[in-house]
Image 1 (cartoon, rainbow over the protein chains, first blue to last red):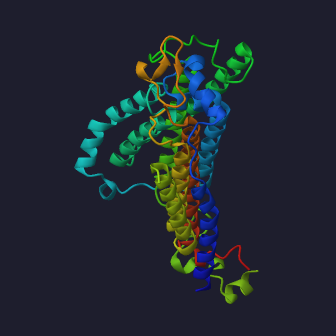
Image 2 (spheres, rainbow over the protein chains, first blue to last red; image 1 turned 90 degrees about the vertical axis):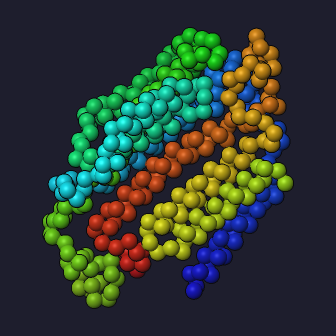
Length: 259
Length: 126
C-alpha cells in the first residue's frame, strides 16, 4: 500500500516536470545549427539524406561513441554469460518445425541482401548502417532458430567486427590528415554527384563499416543469448531447489548462520 | 493542438506507463519491459520536438525540393529538423544495448537464484 502511494507520488512529480515541456509546445522554426545543416548539407556533403549527413559527418564523433557503447554492452553481455556452456541439445525436442526450416532456407538470403541494400543506400534513403546491421542480424537469428546446433563462424565474425571498427577510426584519422578535422569529408574521397549511389565522400564507406560491425555484433549477442541452460555445477556444487542459495530468501535463520 | 503536441502527449503517456511498470511490478522481466517502454516514450518525445507540422522528411531526393538546382541549396522552411532524428537514431541503438545487458543480468540472476521475483533478491538490502 505504501509502495503504491509512493509510486503514485513519484509519477505525479515526473508528470509535473513533463507538463512544462508539453505546455511549452514545439518550435515552429529550425534552430541556427539545424538551419546550417539543412541549407548547407548537400553543398558540403552531397548526401541526399540529411539525417545521415548529421549522424555520420557533422556528429560523426558521437556515432563513434555510440558504436563503442554498443560494443561494450555486447562484450558485457558475453562476459556475464560466459559460464553458461552450450548444453548438448536434445535433437528431437529442439528441432524446429518444417515451416521454420523451409522458411529459413528461402528467406535468409533475401533478408541478408535487404540488410546490405539498406546500409549501402544509407546516404540516399531512410535507413543506414545501424538499421541494415539489425536486419542482417535478424537473418542470422532466423538461421539459428531453424537449426539450434548451427555453429556461427566466431573467428570470422570477430575479425569482421574488429576490422570494421578499426577502419572507422582510420577513416576519421584520414579526415584529420587531409582536411585538418577528425572525420572530415571534403578532400578525403571525391564527393561525386548529388543523389547518386557513389556520392557523399566517406559517408557510405563509414555506413558500410557500421553495418558490418553492428550486424556481426548483434549476431554474436544473439548467439550468446541462445546458448543452452546453465550447466548444473558450473559454480562448484550441483543446484537443486533445496540447495538453492539461502542468502536471497532473507530469513533471519540463513543470515545468522552464514554471516 | 497540432500533431506534434499529440506525439508529445503520447510519448509522455508511454514514459509514465513504463515508469509505473518498472516501479510496481515484482517480476524482473516485466521491470525490464517497463524500462524499454520508457525508452520508446522518450524517443517519441525527442522526435516530436523536431517534427514541425506541414513539412516533409529531411531527405532531398527530388530536384523540386532544391530551392536552387545548380547551387544545391535547400529551403530551410520545407523540411523538419534533422538533429532530433539523428539523436533518436543514437538513442535507439543505445537502448538496444542497455536492454540486452539488463536481460543478460536477469538471465544470470535466474541461473543463480532460480527466481525472477525482485522481493527475493535481498543481497544488497539490510
